[in-house]
Amino acid sequence: MKIKLIHSTAATVAAWVMTLAFASASTLSTPQPQSALSLVKATAGGFSLSISNAGDQAWILQSSSNFSTWTEVESLQVYNGSFQRRYTNGLAGNLFYRAYYDAARQTNARTTANALVLPATSYNYAAPVLPASFSANPILAEDNMPANNLTTDAGATLGRALFYDKRLSTNQTVSCASCHQQAHGFADPRPVSVGFNGRLGSRNAMGLSNARWYQRRNFFWDERAATLEDQTLQPVQDPIEMGMMLAALTNRLASEPFYTNLFAKAFGSTAITTNRISAALAQFVRSIVSTASKYDTGVTNNFANFTASENLGRQIFFGLPGAPRATCAACHGTDNFVPTTGLNNNGLEFPYTDLGVGGVTGATNQNGLFKVPSLRNIELTAPYMHDGRFTNLEQVVDFYDSGVVANPNLSPPLLGRNGTPLRLNLTSDEKAALVAFLKTLTDPTLATDPKWSDPFNYGD
Ligand code: HEC
Ligand code: HEC
Image 1: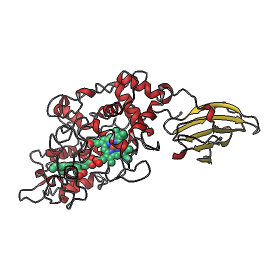
Image 2: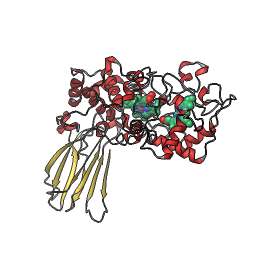
Image 3: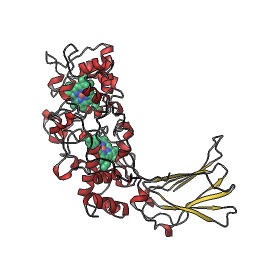
Image 4: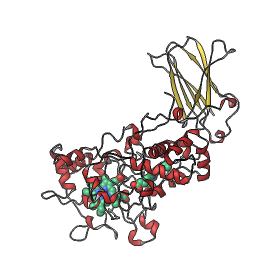
Protein backbone atom coordinates (compact mmCIF):
# COMPACT_ATOMS: atom_id res chain seq x y z
CA MET A 1 0.00 0.00 0.00
CA LYS A 2 1.28 3.44 -0.91
CA ILE A 3 0.02 6.75 0.36
CA LYS A 4 1.28 9.97 -1.11
CA LEU A 5 0.55 13.57 -0.21
CA ILE A 6 1.46 16.01 -2.88
CA HIS A 7 1.28 19.76 -2.53
CA SER A 8 0.45 21.45 -5.78
CA THR A 9 2.67 24.45 -6.31
CA ALA A 10 0.63 26.02 -9.09
CA ALA A 11 0.51 29.69 -8.19
CA THR A 12 -3.14 30.24 -9.05
CA VAL A 13 -4.55 27.17 -7.36
CA ALA A 14 -3.75 26.83 -3.71
CA ALA A 15 -4.63 23.20 -3.73
CA TRP A 16 -3.55 19.98 -2.18
CA VAL A 17 -3.61 16.77 -4.07
CA MET A 18 -4.34 13.67 -2.10
CA THR A 19 -3.15 10.53 -3.80
CA LEU A 20 -3.89 7.12 -2.44
CA ALA A 21 -2.46 4.05 -4.04
CA PHE A 22 -3.66 0.75 -2.78
CA ALA A 23 -2.59 -1.59 -5.44
CA SER A 24 -0.30 -4.40 -4.48
CA ALA A 25 -1.47 -7.74 -5.80
CA SER A 26 -1.44 -9.39 -2.39
CA THR A 27 -4.06 -7.01 -1.05
CA LEU A 28 -6.52 -7.37 -3.91
CA SER A 29 -8.86 -9.92 -2.49
CA THR A 30 -8.33 -9.16 1.19
CA PRO A 31 -7.76 -5.45 1.57
CA GLN A 32 -6.11 -4.25 4.73
CA PRO A 33 -8.76 -3.78 7.42
CA GLN A 34 -7.08 -0.78 8.99
CA SER A 35 -7.76 2.65 7.61
CA ALA A 36 -5.59 3.59 4.72
CA LEU A 37 -5.77 7.27 5.04
CA SER A 38 -4.28 10.36 3.71
CA LEU A 39 -4.66 13.77 5.17
CA VAL A 40 -5.13 16.97 3.30
CA LYS A 41 -5.80 20.50 4.48
CA ALA A 42 -8.29 22.20 2.21
CA THR A 43 -7.79 25.84 1.40
CA ALA A 44 -10.05 28.15 -0.58
CA GLY A 45 -8.84 26.53 -3.80
CA GLY A 46 -10.13 23.14 -2.77
CA PHE A 47 -8.22 19.96 -3.39
CA SER A 48 -7.98 17.03 -5.72
CA LEU A 49 -8.46 13.50 -4.58
CA SER A 50 -6.98 10.72 -6.60
CA ILE A 51 -7.16 7.09 -5.57
CA SER A 52 -5.32 4.30 -7.30
CA ASN A 53 -6.77 1.00 -6.17
CA ALA A 54 -6.56 -2.07 -8.40
CA GLY A 55 -8.93 -3.89 -6.02
CA ASP A 56 -11.80 -1.51 -6.83
CA GLN A 57 -12.87 -0.91 -3.23
CA ALA A 58 -15.09 1.73 -1.65
CA TRP A 59 -13.46 4.60 0.22
CA ILE A 60 -14.88 7.01 2.80
CA LEU A 61 -14.05 10.70 2.59
CA GLN A 62 -14.33 12.62 5.88
CA SER A 63 -13.52 16.10 7.13
CA SER A 64 -12.49 17.49 10.49
CA SER A 65 -11.32 20.76 11.99
CA ASN A 66 -9.72 19.27 15.07
CA PHE A 67 -8.59 15.73 14.22
CA SER A 68 -10.93 14.24 16.80
CA THR A 69 -14.39 14.65 15.32
CA TRP A 70 -14.75 13.43 11.75
CA THR A 71 -17.75 14.09 9.52
CA GLU A 72 -18.44 11.94 6.50
CA VAL A 73 -18.48 13.85 3.23
CA GLU A 74 -19.23 10.93 0.94
CA SER A 75 -18.33 7.38 0.15
CA LEU A 76 -16.54 6.75 -3.12
CA GLN A 77 -16.50 3.64 -5.25
CA VAL A 78 -13.41 2.93 -7.33
CA TYR A 79 -14.00 1.33 -10.72
CA ASN A 80 -11.27 -0.10 -12.93
CA GLY A 81 -8.43 0.87 -10.64
CA SER A 82 -8.62 4.60 -10.29
CA PHE A 83 -10.75 7.45 -9.09
CA GLN A 84 -10.25 11.19 -9.19
CA ARG A 85 -12.36 14.14 -8.19
CA ARG A 86 -11.65 17.78 -7.66
CA TYR A 87 -13.36 19.36 -4.67
CA THR A 88 -13.73 23.07 -5.21
CA ASN A 89 -17.08 24.37 -4.03
CA GLY A 90 -18.69 24.61 -0.63
CA LEU A 91 -15.58 23.71 1.33
CA ALA A 92 -15.15 25.49 4.60
CA GLY A 93 -11.59 26.76 4.81
CA ASN A 94 -8.97 25.07 6.94
CA LEU A 95 -10.68 21.76 7.23
CA PHE A 96 -8.68 18.55 7.10
CA TYR A 97 -9.80 15.74 4.87
CA ARG A 98 -9.04 12.07 4.88
CA ALA A 99 -10.05 9.14 2.75
CA TYR A 100 -9.89 5.70 4.22
CA TYR A 101 -10.85 2.14 3.60
CA ASP A 102 -13.42 0.50 5.86
CA ALA A 103 -14.07 -3.21 5.39
CA ALA A 104 -17.57 -2.78 6.78
CA ARG A 105 -18.49 -0.25 4.13
CA GLN A 106 -17.98 -2.29 0.99
CA THR A 107 -21.64 -2.75 0.15
CA ASN A 108 -22.14 -0.08 -2.52
CA ALA A 109 -24.44 -1.15 -5.34
CA ARG A 110 -22.16 -1.65 -8.30
CA THR A 111 -24.66 -1.01 -11.04
CA THR A 112 -24.29 -0.27 -14.72
CA ALA A 113 -25.48 3.26 -13.95
CA ASN A 114 -22.64 4.07 -11.58
CA ALA A 115 -19.83 1.86 -12.89
CA LEU A 116 -20.04 2.98 -16.50
CA VAL A 117 -20.72 6.18 -18.37
CA LEU A 118 -23.03 5.05 -21.17
CA PRO A 119 -25.32 7.13 -23.41
CA ALA A 120 -29.08 6.90 -22.80
CA THR A 121 -29.54 5.50 -26.29
CA SER A 122 -26.83 3.06 -27.25
CA TYR A 123 -24.18 4.04 -29.74
CA ASN A 124 -24.71 2.47 -33.14
CA TYR A 125 -22.36 -0.48 -33.49
CA ALA A 126 -24.61 -2.89 -35.37
CA ALA A 127 -25.27 -0.89 -38.51
CA PRO A 128 -22.38 1.42 -39.43
CA VAL A 129 -22.86 3.46 -42.58
CA LEU A 130 -20.44 1.97 -45.10
CA PRO A 131 -19.12 3.21 -48.44
CA ALA A 132 -20.49 1.47 -51.54
CA SER A 133 -17.29 -0.53 -52.10
CA PHE A 134 -17.78 -2.31 -48.76
CA SER A 135 -21.10 -3.75 -49.90
CA ALA A 136 -19.68 -5.36 -53.04
CA ASN A 137 -16.91 -7.82 -53.79
CA PRO A 138 -14.02 -8.01 -53.21
CA ILE A 139 -14.51 -6.33 -49.80
CA LEU A 140 -17.87 -8.00 -49.16
CA ALA A 141 -16.12 -11.40 -49.35
CA GLU A 142 -13.56 -10.16 -46.80
CA ASP A 143 -16.22 -9.64 -44.12
CA ASN A 144 -15.39 -12.14 -41.36
CA MET A 145 -18.45 -11.53 -39.16
CA PRO A 146 -19.90 -15.01 -38.58
CA ALA A 147 -23.66 -15.65 -38.76
CA ASN A 148 -23.58 -16.94 -35.17
CA ASN A 149 -22.02 -13.77 -33.76
CA LEU A 150 -23.56 -10.80 -35.52
CA THR A 151 -22.62 -7.51 -33.90
CA THR A 152 -25.43 -5.99 -31.86
CA ASP A 153 -25.39 -2.69 -30.01
CA ALA A 154 -25.76 -4.45 -26.64
CA GLY A 155 -23.10 -7.04 -27.47
CA ALA A 156 -20.54 -4.44 -28.54
CA THR A 157 -21.36 -2.31 -25.48
CA LEU A 158 -20.52 -5.29 -23.27
CA GLY A 159 -17.41 -5.89 -25.39
CA ARG A 160 -16.39 -2.26 -24.89
CA ALA A 161 -16.55 -2.61 -21.10
CA LEU A 162 -14.54 -5.85 -21.27
CA PHE A 163 -12.00 -4.29 -23.64
CA TYR A 164 -11.25 -1.49 -21.16
CA ASP A 165 -11.52 -3.55 -17.97
CA LYS A 166 -8.25 -4.21 -16.16
CA ARG A 167 -9.95 -7.03 -14.27
CA LEU A 168 -9.27 -9.16 -17.34
CA SER A 169 -5.62 -9.38 -16.23
CA THR A 170 -4.63 -11.39 -13.21
CA ASN A 171 -3.37 -8.49 -11.08
CA GLN A 172 -5.96 -6.09 -12.50
CA THR A 173 -3.45 -3.72 -14.04
CA VAL A 174 -3.70 -4.35 -17.80
CA SER A 175 -6.68 -4.19 -20.15
CA CYS A 176 -6.86 -4.86 -23.88
CA ALA A 177 -6.69 -1.08 -24.27
CA SER A 178 -3.33 -0.91 -22.48
CA CYS A 179 -1.80 -2.32 -25.68
CA HIS A 180 -4.51 -1.37 -28.19
CA GLN A 181 -4.78 2.35 -27.60
CA GLN A 182 -7.52 4.34 -29.31
CA ALA A 183 -5.30 7.41 -29.79
CA HIS A 184 -2.90 5.16 -31.71
CA GLY A 185 -5.45 3.50 -33.99
CA PHE A 186 -5.84 0.72 -31.39
CA ALA A 187 -2.18 -0.22 -31.77
CA ASP A 188 0.64 0.07 -29.23
CA PRO A 189 3.12 2.96 -29.60
CA ARG A 190 5.77 0.73 -27.95
CA PRO A 191 7.70 -1.53 -30.39
CA VAL A 192 6.74 -4.61 -28.37
CA SER A 193 3.96 -4.73 -25.80
CA VAL A 194 4.42 -4.84 -22.04
CA GLY A 195 2.36 -7.34 -20.05
CA PHE A 196 0.72 -7.34 -16.62
CA ASN A 197 3.95 -7.87 -14.66
CA GLY A 198 6.15 -5.66 -16.79
CA ARG A 199 7.53 -8.41 -19.00
CA LEU A 200 8.02 -7.67 -22.69
CA GLY A 201 6.30 -9.59 -25.46
CA SER A 202 8.05 -10.26 -28.77
CA ARG A 203 5.76 -8.49 -31.26
CA ASN A 204 4.14 -5.15 -31.95
CA ALA A 205 0.41 -4.94 -31.25
CA MET A 206 -1.39 -4.33 -34.51
CA GLY A 207 -4.03 -1.67 -35.02
CA LEU A 208 -7.59 -2.97 -34.95
CA SER A 209 -9.48 -0.68 -37.33
CA ASN A 210 -11.41 -2.64 -39.95
CA ALA A 211 -10.23 -6.00 -38.60
CA ARG A 212 -13.72 -7.10 -39.64
CA TRP A 213 -12.62 -7.25 -43.27
CA TYR A 214 -9.96 -9.90 -43.72
CA GLN A 215 -10.88 -12.74 -46.01
CA ARG A 216 -8.61 -15.42 -44.56
CA ARG A 217 -10.37 -14.75 -41.23
CA ASN A 218 -7.23 -15.58 -39.24
CA PHE A 219 -5.82 -13.28 -36.61
CA PHE A 220 -2.35 -12.43 -35.23
CA TRP A 221 0.79 -11.74 -37.26
CA ASP A 222 1.34 -15.48 -37.68
CA GLU A 223 -2.40 -16.18 -38.18
CA ARG A 224 -2.45 -18.70 -35.34
CA ALA A 225 -6.03 -17.79 -34.35
CA ALA A 226 -8.54 -19.23 -36.83
CA THR A 227 -11.17 -16.59 -36.11
CA LEU A 228 -11.56 -13.40 -34.13
CA GLU A 229 -13.72 -15.32 -31.64
CA ASP A 230 -10.74 -17.68 -31.11
CA GLN A 231 -8.35 -14.77 -30.83
CA THR A 232 -10.00 -12.67 -28.13
CA LEU A 233 -9.42 -15.03 -25.20
CA GLN A 234 -5.77 -15.66 -26.08
CA PRO A 235 -4.32 -12.40 -24.71
CA VAL A 236 -6.33 -12.93 -21.52
CA GLN A 237 -4.62 -16.27 -20.89
CA ASP A 238 -1.23 -15.34 -22.33
CA PRO A 239 1.37 -15.72 -19.56
CA ILE A 240 3.06 -12.45 -20.52
CA GLU A 241 0.10 -10.32 -21.58
CA MET A 242 -2.71 -10.74 -19.01
CA GLY A 243 -1.94 -14.05 -17.23
CA MET A 244 -5.54 -14.84 -16.30
CA MET A 245 -7.23 -18.22 -15.76
CA LEU A 246 -10.59 -18.31 -17.52
CA ALA A 247 -12.41 -19.81 -14.53
CA ALA A 248 -11.10 -17.02 -12.33
CA LEU A 249 -12.23 -14.52 -14.93
CA THR A 250 -15.83 -15.68 -15.12
CA ASN A 251 -15.99 -15.71 -11.30
CA ARG A 252 -14.54 -12.25 -11.07
CA LEU A 253 -16.97 -10.81 -13.60
CA ALA A 254 -19.94 -12.65 -12.08
CA SER A 255 -19.35 -10.80 -8.81
CA GLU A 256 -20.05 -7.49 -10.57
CA PRO A 257 -23.76 -6.61 -10.81
CA PHE A 258 -23.08 -4.35 -13.76
CA TYR A 259 -21.71 -7.27 -15.73
CA THR A 260 -24.69 -9.48 -15.01
CA ASN A 261 -26.78 -6.65 -16.38
CA LEU A 262 -24.66 -6.17 -19.52
CA PHE A 263 -24.54 -9.91 -20.25
CA ALA A 264 -28.32 -10.14 -19.90
CA LYS A 265 -28.82 -7.27 -22.33
CA ALA A 266 -26.36 -8.74 -24.82
CA PHE A 267 -27.27 -12.43 -24.64
CA GLY A 268 -30.70 -12.63 -23.05
CA SER A 269 -29.64 -14.17 -19.72
CA THR A 270 -27.23 -13.32 -16.93
CA ALA A 271 -24.90 -16.30 -17.41
CA ILE A 272 -21.25 -15.25 -17.73
CA THR A 273 -19.38 -17.77 -19.86
CA THR A 274 -16.07 -17.68 -21.67
CA ASN A 275 -17.86 -18.09 -25.02
CA ARG A 276 -19.93 -15.02 -24.32
CA ILE A 277 -16.86 -13.04 -23.23
CA SER A 278 -15.01 -13.90 -26.44
CA ALA A 279 -18.10 -13.22 -28.57
CA ALA A 280 -18.69 -9.79 -27.03
CA LEU A 281 -15.03 -8.81 -27.36
CA ALA A 282 -15.10 -9.89 -31.00
CA GLN A 283 -18.25 -7.82 -31.59
CA PHE A 284 -16.57 -4.74 -30.13
CA VAL A 285 -13.39 -5.24 -32.18
CA ARG A 286 -15.45 -5.71 -35.37
CA SER A 287 -17.36 -2.55 -34.58
CA ILE A 288 -14.15 -0.49 -34.92
CA VAL A 289 -15.01 0.49 -38.47
CA SER A 290 -13.18 3.35 -40.07
CA THR A 291 -14.37 4.76 -43.38
CA ALA A 292 -14.26 8.54 -42.93
CA SER A 293 -10.75 9.20 -44.25
CA LYS A 294 -9.67 11.70 -46.87
CA TYR A 295 -9.19 8.68 -49.14
CA ASP A 296 -12.87 7.71 -48.71
CA THR A 297 -13.95 11.19 -49.75
CA GLY A 298 -11.56 10.92 -52.69
CA VAL A 299 -13.23 7.74 -53.87
CA THR A 300 -16.48 9.70 -54.22
CA ASN A 301 -15.03 12.71 -56.08
CA ASN A 302 -12.34 11.19 -58.27
CA PHE A 303 -9.71 12.42 -55.78
CA ALA A 304 -10.36 16.08 -56.47
CA ASN A 305 -9.78 16.66 -52.72
CA PHE A 306 -6.20 15.33 -52.96
CA THR A 307 -3.12 17.52 -53.26
CA ALA A 308 -0.84 16.93 -56.26
CA SER A 309 1.56 15.07 -53.99
CA GLU A 310 -1.16 12.84 -52.52
CA ASN A 311 -2.35 12.00 -56.02
CA LEU A 312 1.18 11.17 -57.16
CA GLY A 313 1.51 8.93 -54.09
CA ARG A 314 -1.76 7.22 -54.99
CA GLN A 315 -0.53 6.55 -58.51
CA ILE A 316 2.70 5.07 -57.17
CA PHE A 317 0.85 2.95 -54.59
CA PHE A 318 -1.56 1.48 -57.13
CA GLY A 319 1.09 1.27 -59.89
CA LEU A 320 -1.04 3.44 -62.18
CA PRO A 321 0.28 4.21 -65.66
CA GLY A 322 3.01 6.82 -65.77
CA ALA A 323 4.07 6.32 -62.16
CA PRO A 324 7.09 4.30 -60.96
CA ARG A 325 6.36 0.59 -60.76
CA ALA A 326 5.49 0.07 -57.09
CA THR A 327 3.34 -2.93 -56.31
CA CYS A 328 1.90 -2.00 -52.92
CA ALA A 329 -1.68 -2.74 -53.99
CA ALA A 330 -0.81 -6.33 -54.92
CA CYS A 331 -0.71 -7.03 -51.18
CA HIS A 332 -2.42 -4.02 -49.61
CA GLY A 333 -5.32 -4.07 -52.07
CA THR A 334 -8.97 -3.02 -52.19
CA ASP A 335 -10.35 0.02 -50.40
CA ASN A 336 -9.56 -1.82 -47.17
CA PHE A 337 -5.87 -2.18 -48.06
CA VAL A 338 -5.54 -5.89 -47.29
CA PRO A 339 -4.89 -8.82 -49.65
CA THR A 340 -7.82 -11.04 -50.54
CA THR A 341 -6.42 -14.49 -49.85
CA GLY A 342 -2.63 -14.19 -49.80
CA LEU A 343 -0.05 -14.71 -47.08
CA ASN A 344 3.11 -12.78 -47.75
CA ASN A 345 6.75 -12.15 -47.01
CA ASN A 346 7.90 -8.59 -47.66
CA GLY A 347 11.63 -9.18 -47.33
CA LEU A 348 12.34 -7.59 -43.97
CA GLU A 349 15.26 -9.90 -43.17
CA PHE A 350 17.04 -13.18 -43.84
CA PRO A 351 17.72 -15.35 -41.90
CA TYR A 352 14.34 -14.98 -40.21
CA THR A 353 14.44 -13.92 -36.56
CA ASP A 354 10.71 -14.68 -36.29
CA LEU A 355 9.41 -17.58 -38.40
CA GLY A 356 5.90 -16.07 -38.58
CA VAL A 357 3.35 -18.45 -40.13
CA GLY A 358 6.03 -21.16 -40.57
CA GLY A 359 6.60 -21.13 -36.81
CA VAL A 360 2.98 -22.25 -36.38
CA THR A 361 2.58 -24.66 -39.29
CA GLY A 362 6.14 -26.05 -39.43
CA ALA A 363 6.15 -25.62 -43.24
CA THR A 364 9.51 -24.20 -44.35
CA ASN A 365 7.94 -22.50 -47.36
CA GLN A 366 5.86 -20.47 -44.89
CA ASN A 367 8.81 -19.25 -42.84
CA GLY A 368 8.87 -15.47 -42.70
CA LEU A 369 5.30 -15.10 -43.95
CA PHE A 370 3.10 -12.70 -41.99
CA LYS A 371 -0.42 -11.41 -42.02
CA VAL A 372 -0.66 -8.23 -44.08
CA PRO A 373 -2.39 -5.74 -41.83
CA SER A 374 -4.78 -3.15 -43.22
CA LEU A 375 -3.06 0.17 -43.91
CA ARG A 376 -6.10 2.13 -42.76
CA ASN A 377 -5.07 4.66 -40.09
CA ILE A 378 -1.46 3.61 -40.60
CA GLU A 379 -0.32 7.12 -39.68
CA LEU A 380 -1.59 6.50 -36.13
CA THR A 381 -0.21 3.02 -35.53
CA ALA A 382 3.58 3.52 -35.46
CA PRO A 383 5.93 1.79 -34.99
CA TYR A 384 5.63 -0.57 -37.96
CA MET A 385 6.02 -4.26 -38.88
CA HIS A 386 5.56 -7.28 -36.60
CA ASP A 387 8.61 -6.29 -34.55
CA GLY A 388 7.99 -2.53 -34.57
CA ARG A 389 11.34 -1.98 -36.33
CA PHE A 390 10.38 1.18 -38.23
CA THR A 391 9.47 4.24 -36.23
CA ASN A 392 7.89 6.25 -39.06
CA LEU A 393 6.41 5.95 -42.54
CA GLU A 394 9.46 7.54 -44.16
CA GLN A 395 11.50 4.56 -42.98
CA VAL A 396 8.86 2.15 -44.31
CA VAL A 397 8.95 3.81 -47.74
CA ASP A 398 12.78 3.81 -47.77
CA PHE A 399 12.64 0.10 -46.97
CA TYR A 400 10.29 -0.72 -49.87
CA ASP A 401 12.29 1.61 -52.13
CA SER A 402 15.69 0.03 -51.70
CA GLY A 403 15.83 -2.28 -48.67
CA VAL A 404 13.79 -5.40 -49.50
CA VAL A 405 15.97 -8.42 -48.59
CA ALA A 406 16.29 -11.50 -50.81
CA ASN A 407 15.01 -14.68 -49.16
CA PRO A 408 13.55 -17.99 -50.34
CA ASN A 409 9.98 -16.98 -49.47
CA LEU A 410 9.93 -13.41 -50.77
CA SER A 411 6.51 -12.84 -52.34
CA PRO A 412 6.50 -12.36 -56.14
CA PRO A 413 5.19 -8.76 -56.18
CA LEU A 414 8.46 -7.72 -54.51
CA LEU A 415 10.68 -9.51 -57.02
CA GLY A 416 12.15 -7.55 -59.91
CA ARG A 417 12.39 -8.85 -63.48
CA ASN A 418 15.75 -10.50 -62.86
CA GLY A 419 14.53 -12.37 -59.78
CA THR A 420 16.26 -10.10 -57.28
CA PRO A 421 14.35 -7.91 -54.83
CA LEU A 422 12.45 -5.08 -56.50
CA ARG A 423 14.15 -1.68 -56.34
CA LEU A 424 11.86 1.30 -56.89
CA ASN A 425 14.51 4.03 -57.09
CA LEU A 426 11.99 6.70 -56.11
CA THR A 427 13.04 10.35 -56.02
CA SER A 428 12.71 12.15 -52.70
CA ASP A 429 9.55 13.87 -54.01
CA GLU A 430 8.07 10.51 -54.95
CA LYS A 431 8.88 9.06 -51.53
CA ALA A 432 7.28 12.07 -49.86
CA ALA A 433 4.26 11.61 -52.14
CA LEU A 434 3.86 7.97 -51.10
CA VAL A 435 3.99 8.98 -47.42
CA ALA A 436 1.45 11.76 -48.10
CA PHE A 437 -0.85 9.22 -49.74
CA LEU A 438 -0.57 6.81 -46.80
CA LYS A 439 -1.64 9.65 -44.50
CA THR A 440 -4.87 10.12 -46.49
CA LEU A 441 -5.94 6.79 -44.98
CA THR A 442 -6.28 8.41 -41.56
CA ASP A 443 -9.84 8.72 -40.28
CA PRO A 444 -9.95 11.77 -38.03
CA THR A 445 -12.82 10.37 -35.96
CA LEU A 446 -11.26 7.00 -35.09
CA ALA A 447 -8.98 8.23 -32.34
CA THR A 448 -11.63 10.27 -30.58
CA ASP A 449 -15.07 8.77 -31.20
CA PRO A 450 -16.54 8.11 -27.73
CA LYS A 451 -18.26 4.92 -28.91
CA TRP A 452 -14.87 3.19 -28.79
CA SER A 453 -13.52 4.99 -25.71
CA ASP A 454 -13.07 3.87 -22.11
CA PRO A 455 -16.60 3.64 -20.61
CA PHE A 456 -15.63 3.36 -16.92
CA ASN A 457 -16.67 5.96 -14.38
CA TYR A 458 -13.53 7.41 -12.83
CA GLY A 459 -15.31 9.90 -10.64
CA ASP A 460 -15.35 13.15 -12.57
C1 HEC B 1 0.16 -6.89 -23.34
C2 HEC B 1 -0.31 -6.30 -24.56
C3 HEC B 1 -1.60 -6.78 -25.17
C4 HEC B 1 -2.81 -6.95 -24.52
C5 HEC B 1 -3.13 -6.75 -23.06
C6 HEC B 1 -3.73 -7.34 -25.55
N1 HEC B 1 -3.12 -7.39 -26.77
FE1 HEC B 1 -3.99 -7.81 -28.55
N2 HEC B 1 -2.19 -7.89 -29.42
C7 HEC B 1 -0.99 -7.63 -28.79
C8 HEC B 1 0.10 -8.03 -29.65
C9 HEC B 1 1.58 -7.90 -29.32
C10 HEC B 1 -0.48 -8.56 -30.82
C11 HEC B 1 0.25 -9.23 -31.97
C12 HEC B 1 0.66 -10.59 -31.39
C13 HEC B 1 1.02 -11.62 -32.40
O1 HEC B 1 0.65 -11.50 -33.55
O2 HEC B 1 1.67 -12.60 -32.00
C14 HEC B 1 -1.92 -8.45 -30.64
C15 HEC B 1 -2.86 -8.84 -31.59
C16 HEC B 1 -4.23 -8.69 -31.43
C17 HEC B 1 -5.22 -8.94 -32.46
C18 HEC B 1 -4.93 -9.42 -33.87
C19 HEC B 1 -5.23 -8.39 -34.92
C20 HEC B 1 -5.09 -8.92 -36.31
O3 HEC B 1 -5.35 -8.16 -37.24
O4 HEC B 1 -4.73 -10.09 -36.50
C21 HEC B 1 -6.45 -8.67 -31.91
C22 HEC B 1 -7.81 -8.78 -32.58
C23 HEC B 1 -6.22 -8.31 -30.53
N3 HEC B 1 -4.87 -8.30 -30.28
C24 HEC B 1 -7.22 -8.03 -29.62
C25 HEC B 1 -7.00 -7.97 -28.24
C26 HEC B 1 -8.05 -8.06 -27.24
C27 HEC B 1 -9.53 -8.21 -27.51
C28 HEC B 1 -7.42 -7.97 -26.02
C29 HEC B 1 -8.03 -8.07 -24.63
C30 HEC B 1 -8.73 -9.29 -24.33
C31 HEC B 1 -6.01 -7.81 -26.29
N4 HEC B 1 -5.79 -7.83 -27.64
C32 HEC B 1 -5.06 -7.62 -25.30
C33 HEC B 1 -0.83 -7.07 -27.55
C34 HEC B 1 -1.81 -7.08 -26.58
C1 HEC C 1 4.39 -8.88 -51.30
C2 HEC C 1 3.38 -8.25 -50.52
C3 HEC C 1 3.62 -6.81 -50.11
C4 HEC C 1 3.88 -5.72 -50.91
C5 HEC C 1 4.05 -5.67 -52.40
C6 HEC C 1 3.92 -4.59 -50.03
N1 HEC C 1 3.70 -4.97 -48.74
FE1 HEC C 1 3.59 -3.77 -47.15
N2 HEC C 1 3.45 -5.41 -45.93
C7 HEC C 1 3.44 -6.72 -46.34
C8 HEC C 1 3.54 -7.59 -45.21
C9 HEC C 1 3.58 -9.12 -45.25
C10 HEC C 1 3.63 -6.77 -44.08
C11 HEC C 1 3.83 -7.21 -42.63
C12 HEC C 1 5.28 -7.62 -42.57
C13 HEC C 1 5.81 -7.96 -41.19
O1 HEC C 1 5.57 -7.23 -40.24
O2 HEC C 1 6.54 -8.97 -41.11
C14 HEC C 1 3.57 -5.40 -44.57
C15 HEC C 1 3.61 -4.28 -43.76
C16 HEC C 1 3.51 -2.97 -44.22
C17 HEC C 1 3.40 -1.83 -43.38
C18 HEC C 1 3.39 -1.85 -41.85
C19 HEC C 1 2.04 -2.25 -41.32
C20 HEC C 1 1.96 -2.25 -39.82
O3 HEC C 1 0.83 -2.22 -39.30
O4 HEC C 1 2.99 -2.30 -39.14
C21 HEC C 1 3.30 -0.73 -44.20
C22 HEC C 1 3.13 0.71 -43.76
C23 HEC C 1 3.37 -1.20 -45.55
N3 HEC C 1 3.49 -2.56 -45.54
C24 HEC C 1 3.31 -0.38 -46.68
C25 HEC C 1 3.58 -0.85 -47.96
C26 HEC C 1 3.81 0.01 -49.10
C27 HEC C 1 3.77 1.52 -49.08
C28 HEC C 1 4.08 -0.80 -50.15
C29 HEC C 1 4.47 -0.41 -51.54
C30 HEC C 1 5.69 0.35 -51.66
C31 HEC C 1 3.99 -2.18 -49.67
N4 HEC C 1 3.69 -2.16 -48.35
C32 HEC C 1 4.15 -3.29 -50.47
C33 HEC C 1 3.32 -7.14 -47.65
C34 HEC C 1 3.54 -6.34 -48.76
